[in-house]
Image (cartoon, rainbow, N blue to C red; front, top):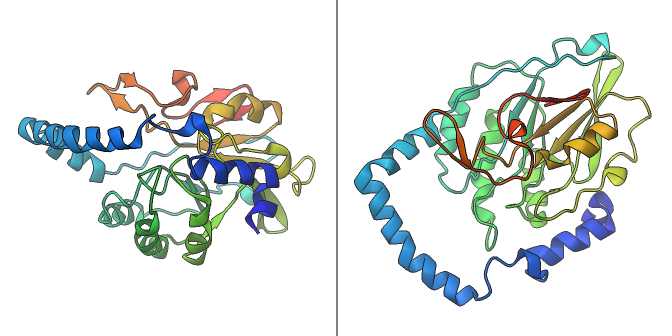
Length: 276
C-alpha cells in the first residue's frame, strides 16, 4: 500500500494536493480565467516562436542530449563498489513528445552503467490525465540495461507508481533499497518531492538502512541539501532545476525554479562531505 510505503501523513498530504484541496497549490484563483488566458496566449506565443526560429532551435536542443560524466570519491566505499556507475536521468516530461525516447536511447546506447536512477518529473502537466507517460516509459525502460530506480517529481501523481513499476521502474517513495555486490552493499534512499508537495520524510525513508551504511539520496529537488548533509549522506542526486529554467546562450541563468543556491542548479557541486 502506498500509505505504508510513503508514510501515512506524507501520502495523505500528497493526495490532498493532487486533488487541489490545498490552497497554496492552486495555480490560479479562477481555473476558467486561466483556461481562457491559455487559449488566447498560447497561439500568440507559438506564432512568435516559430516566426523567430526559436521554436526550431528549441526543438533541436530538446533532442540534442549530451551525457555528462562525473567522478565521485566516497570515503569508506567498499572495494566491491570501486568503479560502480550510476546513470541519472531527470525531468524527462516524456509525454510532451514520445519521440524523445529515441533520442534518449541513442544517447545512452554505448554507455556502461550498473544502475539507472530517474529523479522525477516523468510527465509535463501538473494536473489532469497522466496515462500518456506509460507507453514511452515502457519503451525507454526496455532500452536501459540495468535496474531502474526513481522518485516522484512535483509534476507526477502517486497513481503513476503502479503502472510505471509494472513497466520496470522501481520507485522509492520515502523508501530505501540495498544494492549488493560481492557481499557488500550500499543503499539508495529516495524521498518524495521536497519542493511543491513537501512530502519528504527522511526518518521514514531511512527506517531500514543500517547505521553506518553508504547511502546515496535521490530527491527531485536539491533544496534539502542541508538536511541531507546533516544526516551524513555521501551523495545527493537531484533534478528539477533544468540547469536553469531560462538561460542565456553563454550559460547565464535568467530564471530559476528552485530555491537552492545557484551552484546547485547545474553541474557537480559539494557541500561539506556531501556531493552531487
